[in-house]
Image 1: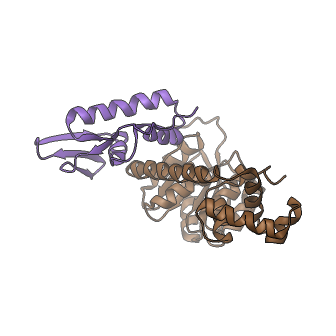
Image 2 (image 1 turned 90 degrees about the horizontal axis):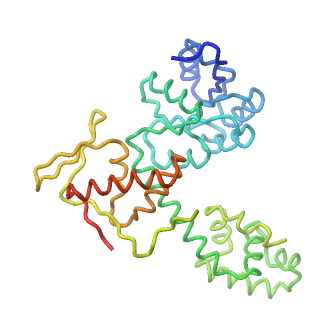
Image 3 (image 1 turned 90 degrees about the vertical axis):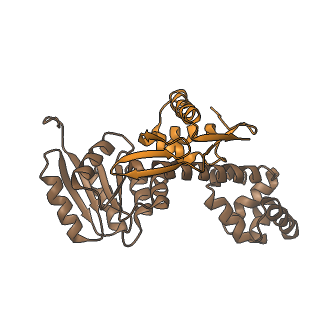
Length: 229
Length: 96
């Protein structure tokens, strides 16, 4: 039951298949509490439409062309933080579920779900709830725990570095070579090289590229911000 | 607030003889040794999945908090009650 005085939920449909978008539009607009304000067939278009129409709710397909559903979710929420994202997937995909929630989605539905369930989840997500298929809860929690352990382990390794080595790592993560590290830190390239070797050893990685990936994959950029200032 | 698990915190582990069956929205744990059947709700099943002998109750609580945004104390009470019920039913043991 919905309140007739409430404004409708303004929806952006982002899915590569026009047939699915058409079906969803018909289904949603048959209900007075939904209004489809935009459609997009790819990720970049979805982000642009979100900026243009400021929807309350975005239905984002996992397999969106040109920017995939995870990246699209993240970009939509960067530009429209008040929007809620309901993530649509073909399958009960554990990694996709975790990635979508980490990107900021608060709902996850498989496309095989009954339409009534999708509508109800859309309402609950818009109302601020986090809604996922109950049968995926255990594996989701296990994934969250696994990610937290990995992040904690990365922080432990980062804590082995001196302040100077953190500065070096921050520059490494930006792709700097020995010269690019030496110049802002006012040290010689040889000293920079020594610091780099120490950083690699303490992090337990084998290359500069691996060190940069360590920072990015573990979301440690913020931990290093300021170290290079 | 930091609720990091204590190093020596005990970890619950599923009894390997017990198996979970999920069908038609129902979750049933069957214990052949005791010839007992336990019907579980969604949260209990999720906690059951996490009873792998490696995951501490504190980690379970923190993960549920991260997902639900419920207060730590509320989640802690629920998780510990579920684990206590598992323990009394004999479907888990404790390691560590």
